[in-house]
Length: 209
Ligand code: AP5
Image 1 (tube, rainbow, N blue to C red):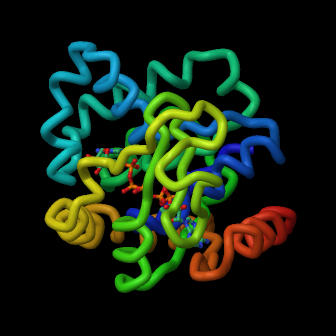
Image 2 (tube, rainbow, N blue to C red):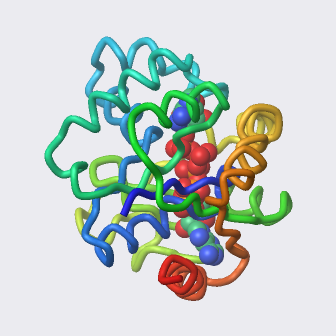
Protein backbone atom coordinates (compact mmCIF):
# COMPACT_ATOMS: atom_id res chain seq x y z
CA UNK A 1 0.00 0.00 0.00
CA UNK A 2 1.38 3.41 -1.02
CA UNK A 3 0.16 6.07 1.41
CA UNK A 4 0.69 9.76 2.06
CA UNK A 5 -0.08 11.23 5.50
CA UNK A 6 -1.06 14.86 5.06
CA UNK A 7 -2.01 17.43 7.68
CA UNK A 8 -0.82 20.38 9.71
CA UNK A 9 2.18 20.17 12.04
CA UNK A 10 1.28 18.39 15.26
CA UNK A 11 -1.84 16.69 13.87
CA UNK A 12 -0.45 13.29 14.90
CA UNK A 13 0.92 12.04 11.57
CA UNK A 14 4.09 10.62 13.14
CA UNK A 15 2.22 9.11 16.10
CA UNK A 16 -0.22 7.25 13.84
CA UNK A 17 2.47 6.32 11.30
CA UNK A 18 4.38 4.51 14.07
CA UNK A 19 1.33 2.25 14.55
CA UNK A 20 0.43 1.96 10.86
CA UNK A 21 3.90 0.82 9.81
CA UNK A 22 3.66 -2.19 12.18
CA UNK A 23 0.09 -2.97 11.18
CA UNK A 24 0.62 -2.79 7.40
CA UNK A 25 4.26 -3.95 7.42
CA UNK A 26 5.48 -1.02 5.33
CA UNK A 27 8.16 1.60 6.12
CA UNK A 28 7.39 4.99 7.63
CA UNK A 29 9.26 7.56 5.53
CA UNK A 30 9.25 10.90 7.33
CA UNK A 31 11.13 13.69 5.58
CA UNK A 32 11.31 15.58 8.88
CA UNK A 33 12.95 12.54 10.55
CA UNK A 34 15.38 12.15 7.62
CA UNK A 35 16.43 15.80 7.92
CA UNK A 36 16.78 15.52 11.72
CA UNK A 37 18.90 12.36 11.30
CA UNK A 38 21.25 14.30 9.00
CA UNK A 39 21.41 17.22 11.43
CA UNK A 40 22.21 14.91 14.34
CA UNK A 41 25.01 13.26 12.35
CA UNK A 42 26.32 16.61 11.12
CA UNK A 43 26.28 15.55 7.43
CA UNK A 44 26.58 18.06 4.57
CA UNK A 45 22.79 17.88 4.13
CA UNK A 46 22.32 18.35 7.87
CA UNK A 47 24.48 21.51 7.87
CA UNK A 48 22.52 22.86 4.90
CA UNK A 49 19.08 22.41 6.46
CA UNK A 50 19.66 22.95 10.21
CA UNK A 51 18.66 26.62 10.35
CA UNK A 52 15.74 26.09 7.98
CA UNK A 53 14.21 23.42 10.23
CA UNK A 54 14.73 25.48 13.38
CA UNK A 55 12.80 28.39 11.84
CA UNK A 56 9.95 26.24 10.54
CA UNK A 57 10.48 27.20 6.89
CA UNK A 58 10.51 24.57 4.15
CA UNK A 59 13.69 23.03 2.77
CA UNK A 60 14.01 23.77 -0.99
CA UNK A 61 12.00 21.38 -3.19
CA UNK A 62 15.04 20.17 -5.16
CA UNK A 63 16.87 19.05 -1.98
CA UNK A 64 13.80 17.34 -0.54
CA UNK A 65 12.79 15.55 -3.75
CA UNK A 66 16.33 14.19 -4.23
CA UNK A 67 16.32 12.84 -0.66
CA UNK A 68 12.97 11.07 -1.18
CA UNK A 69 14.08 9.65 -4.55
CA UNK A 70 17.15 8.19 -2.81
CA UNK A 71 15.04 6.74 0.01
CA UNK A 72 12.74 5.04 -2.52
CA UNK A 73 15.67 3.02 -3.86
CA UNK A 74 15.85 1.05 -0.56
CA UNK A 75 14.46 -2.50 -0.77
CA UNK A 76 11.91 -1.93 1.99
CA UNK A 77 10.10 0.77 -0.01
CA UNK A 78 9.31 -1.58 -2.89
CA UNK A 79 6.38 -3.23 -1.07
CA UNK A 80 4.73 0.05 -0.06
CA UNK A 81 5.30 3.04 2.22
CA UNK A 82 3.81 5.69 4.44
CA UNK A 83 5.10 9.09 3.36
CA UNK A 84 4.85 11.51 6.30
CA UNK A 85 5.59 15.18 5.60
CA UNK A 86 6.05 14.71 1.86
CA UNK A 87 4.81 16.14 -0.43
CA UNK A 88 4.42 19.60 1.10
CA UNK A 89 4.15 21.72 -2.05
CA UNK A 90 2.38 21.27 -5.37
CA UNK A 91 5.81 21.04 -7.02
CA UNK A 92 6.73 18.11 -4.75
CA UNK A 93 3.36 16.43 -5.45
CA UNK A 94 3.97 16.65 -9.19
CA UNK A 95 7.44 15.14 -8.69
CA UNK A 96 5.98 12.30 -6.59
CA UNK A 97 3.46 11.53 -9.35
CA UNK A 98 6.39 10.67 -11.62
CA UNK A 99 7.95 8.40 -8.96
CA UNK A 100 5.08 6.36 -7.48
CA UNK A 101 1.38 5.72 -7.82
CA UNK A 102 -0.60 6.37 -4.61
CA UNK A 103 -3.44 4.34 -3.08
CA UNK A 104 -4.65 7.00 -0.65
CA UNK A 105 -3.81 10.35 0.94
CA UNK A 106 -4.85 10.40 4.61
CA UNK A 107 -5.77 13.96 5.61
CA UNK A 108 -5.48 14.57 9.39
CA UNK A 109 -7.88 17.38 10.34
CA UNK A 110 -7.21 19.32 13.58
CA UNK A 111 -7.96 22.86 14.73
CA UNK A 112 -5.30 25.47 15.42
CA UNK A 113 -5.77 25.68 19.19
CA UNK A 114 -5.25 21.93 19.64
CA UNK A 115 -2.26 21.97 17.26
CA UNK A 116 -0.52 24.56 19.42
CA UNK A 117 -1.23 22.56 22.60
CA UNK A 118 0.14 19.38 21.04
CA UNK A 119 3.30 20.95 19.65
CA UNK A 120 4.23 22.98 22.69
CA UNK A 121 3.88 19.88 24.91
CA UNK A 122 5.70 17.48 22.60
CA UNK A 123 8.95 15.92 23.81
CA UNK A 124 11.08 13.33 22.05
CA UNK A 125 13.96 10.94 22.51
CA UNK A 126 16.85 12.18 20.38
CA UNK A 127 18.29 8.75 19.66
CA UNK A 128 15.15 6.72 18.91
CA UNK A 129 12.78 9.49 17.77
CA UNK A 130 10.04 8.19 20.11
CA UNK A 131 7.38 10.88 20.60
CA UNK A 132 5.77 11.86 23.93
CA UNK A 133 3.50 14.62 25.16
CA UNK A 134 3.85 16.09 28.64
CA UNK A 135 0.09 15.73 29.27
CA UNK A 136 -1.42 13.44 26.59
CA UNK A 137 1.31 10.81 26.47
CA UNK A 138 3.82 11.34 29.28
CA UNK A 139 6.84 9.09 29.89
CA UNK A 140 6.87 6.90 33.03
CA UNK A 141 9.45 9.21 34.65
CA UNK A 142 9.14 12.92 33.86
CA UNK A 143 11.62 14.06 31.19
CA UNK A 144 13.15 10.58 30.68
CA UNK A 145 12.73 8.17 27.75
CA UNK A 146 11.04 4.92 28.85
CA UNK A 147 13.36 2.67 26.84
CA UNK A 148 16.80 4.30 26.77
CA UNK A 149 16.73 6.29 30.03
CA UNK A 150 17.98 9.35 28.13
CA UNK A 151 16.73 12.88 28.83
CA UNK A 152 13.91 13.90 26.48
CA UNK A 153 14.35 16.99 24.32
CA UNK A 154 12.07 19.64 22.87
CA UNK A 155 12.47 20.17 19.11
CA UNK A 156 13.83 23.62 18.17
CA UNK A 157 10.82 24.11 15.92
CA UNK A 158 8.40 23.41 18.79
CA UNK A 159 9.22 26.83 20.33
CA UNK A 160 6.38 29.33 20.00
CA UNK A 161 7.78 31.54 17.21
CA UNK A 162 8.63 28.55 15.00
CA UNK A 163 5.23 26.90 15.64
CA UNK A 164 3.42 30.03 14.41
CA UNK A 165 5.64 30.20 11.32
CA UNK A 166 5.05 26.49 10.57
CA UNK A 167 1.29 27.06 10.71
CA UNK A 168 1.57 29.95 8.24
CA UNK A 169 3.82 27.90 5.94
CA UNK A 170 1.38 24.98 6.11
CA UNK A 171 -1.57 27.20 5.16
CA UNK A 172 0.21 28.88 2.25
CA UNK A 173 2.16 25.98 0.75
CA UNK A 174 0.77 22.63 1.92
CA UNK A 175 -2.97 23.09 2.45
CA UNK A 176 -3.56 23.49 -1.34
CA UNK A 177 -2.57 19.81 -1.63
CA UNK A 178 -5.90 18.81 -0.07
CA UNK A 179 -7.79 20.13 -3.11
CA UNK A 180 -5.08 18.75 -5.44
CA UNK A 181 -5.54 15.20 -4.11
CA UNK A 182 -9.30 15.50 -3.53
CA UNK A 183 -9.70 16.18 -7.22
CA UNK A 184 -7.86 12.93 -7.91
CA UNK A 185 -10.22 11.04 -5.56
CA UNK A 186 -7.40 10.06 -3.20
CA UNK A 187 -8.27 12.00 -0.03
CA UNK A 188 -9.48 10.21 3.10
CA UNK A 189 -10.45 12.74 5.82
CA UNK A 190 -9.69 11.78 9.42
CA UNK A 191 -10.83 13.60 12.56
CA UNK A 192 -7.46 13.87 14.32
CA UNK A 193 -8.89 15.35 17.54
CA UNK A 194 -9.69 11.94 19.06
CA UNK A 195 -7.27 9.74 21.04
CA UNK A 196 -4.45 8.04 19.07
CA UNK A 197 -6.29 4.69 19.45
CA UNK A 198 -9.48 6.13 17.97
CA UNK A 199 -7.64 7.99 15.22
CA UNK A 200 -5.84 4.81 14.19
CA UNK A 201 -9.16 2.89 14.15
CA UNK A 202 -10.60 5.54 11.80
CA UNK A 203 -7.56 5.21 9.52
CA UNK A 204 -7.78 1.40 9.38
CA UNK A 205 -11.53 1.50 8.63
CA UNK A 206 -11.15 4.13 5.93
CA UNK A 207 -8.28 2.30 4.23
CA UNK A 208 -10.10 -1.04 4.31
CA UNK A 209 -12.76 0.37 1.96
P1 AP5 B 1 8.11 17.33 10.15
O1 AP5 B 1 8.94 16.58 11.09
O2 AP5 B 1 7.41 16.61 9.03
O3 AP5 B 1 7.07 18.18 11.01
P2 AP5 B 1 5.51 18.44 10.81
O4 AP5 B 1 4.85 18.09 9.54
O5 AP5 B 1 5.43 19.85 11.21
O6 AP5 B 1 4.87 17.42 11.69
P3 AP5 B 1 5.20 17.15 13.13
O7 AP5 B 1 6.26 16.11 13.24
O8 AP5 B 1 5.44 18.42 13.89
O9 AP5 B 1 3.78 16.65 13.67
P4 AP5 B 1 3.01 15.30 13.52
O10 AP5 B 1 1.76 15.52 12.74
O11 AP5 B 1 3.89 14.15 13.10
O12 AP5 B 1 2.56 15.11 15.04
P5 AP5 B 1 3.08 14.10 16.18
O13 AP5 B 1 2.62 12.71 15.88
O14 AP5 B 1 4.52 14.31 16.48
O15 AP5 B 1 8.96 18.50 9.45
C1 AP5 B 1 9.85 19.31 10.19
C2 AP5 B 1 10.53 20.29 9.25
O16 AP5 B 1 11.30 19.59 8.25
C3 AP5 B 1 9.61 21.21 8.43
O17 AP5 B 1 9.20 22.34 9.17
C4 AP5 B 1 10.55 21.58 7.25
O18 AP5 B 1 11.51 22.54 7.64
C5 AP5 B 1 11.29 20.28 6.99
N1 AP5 B 1 10.56 19.44 6.02
C6 AP5 B 1 10.01 18.21 6.26
N2 AP5 B 1 9.42 17.73 5.15
C7 AP5 B 1 9.60 18.66 4.18
C8 AP5 B 1 9.20 18.76 2.82
N3 AP5 B 1 8.48 17.78 2.25
N4 AP5 B 1 9.56 19.86 2.12
C9 AP5 B 1 10.29 20.84 2.69
N5 AP5 B 1 10.69 20.84 3.99
C10 AP5 B 1 10.35 19.76 4.72
O19 AP5 B 1 2.18 14.63 17.41
C11 AP5 B 1 2.39 15.92 17.97
C12 AP5 B 1 2.19 15.84 19.51
O20 AP5 B 1 0.83 15.53 19.79
C13 AP5 B 1 3.02 14.76 20.20
O21 AP5 B 1 3.46 15.22 21.43
C14 AP5 B 1 2.04 13.57 20.38
O22 AP5 B 1 2.36 12.79 21.53
C15 AP5 B 1 0.72 14.32 20.54
N6 AP5 B 1 -0.39 13.59 19.92
C16 AP5 B 1 -0.40 12.97 18.70
N7 AP5 B 1 -1.61 12.44 18.45
C17 AP5 B 1 -2.38 12.74 19.53
C18 AP5 B 1 -3.75 12.48 19.86
N8 AP5 B 1 -4.54 11.81 19.02
N9 AP5 B 1 -4.22 12.97 21.04
C19 AP5 B 1 -3.41 13.65 21.88
N10 AP5 B 1 -2.11 13.92 21.63
C20 AP5 B 1 -1.62 13.47 20.47
